[in-house]
Image: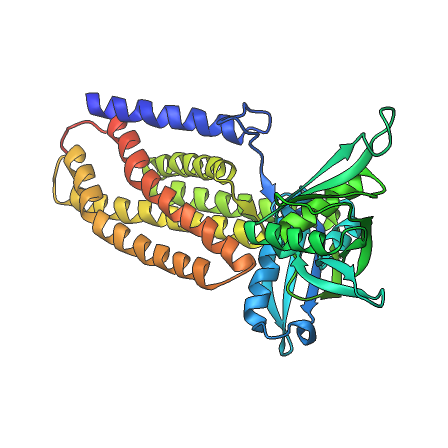
Length: 413
């Protein structure tokens, strides 16, 4: 009995904690704001489809270039401050492509401009005929780029935006040799073939550091420095499709999904109570606790909810009830043998556990396979389903069992 009370106390603590997490205006835990994250189909936003220009890849393998582009674009999108963006590779005919999903995006033009920049940083010198000649120093030789201001170039009363460059060891040696042979000659810096700086070299520069001046604004300097740090795309990318999803569509989808989930939960509750009476009522209480715990985990992990993810959660409700049905049927069989109710209850749980365990593990394996071998919304379905399965095993075996122990005394049937 004492162990049962401790278990009930732990369950109550979990319920209170989960309730505070799910509550929209609840406290922030672990030093971060907890909020429900919505995917593109629910929150609204934009989906951009890009095609990689394979004609300008050179000797690079298209699949490898696609991986590099996805990594670079992901870092650029993260800097935009978009909540839960998604960047993934696709095939457009026989060419590699990339889909970028930006939920809740506000400035789409800025996003397209930053995502689509090739960001090829190159340095040029002049040959004997005063023609531009590309050097072997590129953005890949830059270890770090940082935007800042330089008062010396404009005086104390004003500031001039600059970009401070720190080269790699090899890059620093290249830069030193370039400046050594170009004293009193111009050195031109270009980003995507656009001149961003042209300065006359006054002396040989060692130490692996340089700065780019002549930037129009600090915002431009910060954006350029960020692009340099994130790296250049292996080849230009072309925007081939742009799709908008309105926030009103997402709101309508959420409302319909919630209504469908509530109707399903209500029908399950009616069936359980009509067929199993008191046991069914306990199962519904456990089911409500299950929903509360799952909702809290969605915010704590956090899980980005999509329509498919909500479907996975609703589907897992049936799995949670199924475990209770197995236990209750076994419990009824034990009672018919004339075994005391409390012992029949324990037998019902212990003897139905292998079936519950095996069926849930089978479903969990399916969810894991779907998560790792699929993409897009299917991943969301698999993730919410897996979480639901794990929590359902806890509520069916631990929560339901300990609640029933409070009400069933050790007496003959």
